[in-house]
Image (tube, rainbow, N blue to C red; front, side, top):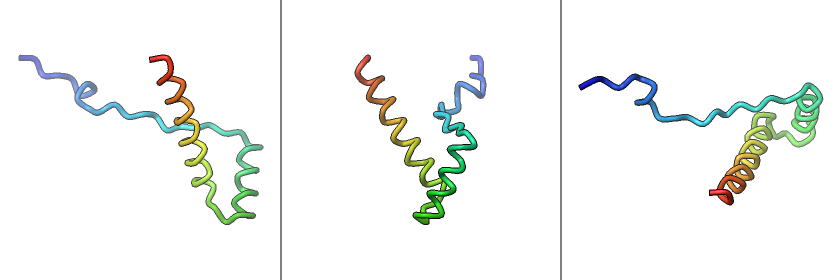
Length: 62
């Protein structure tokens, strides 16, 4: 019996990469200064919201 390659054994991870522009970066830093909420927290919230929209879109087509 052949041994399955490593790639197929690892659980598939969703990529959590979000590229932002310098202008957006500046806005997030300004927001962090005003609200005291960390930049990464804003990014995480935005990413969660974006993924939720994607899930809805994908869910409707399936």
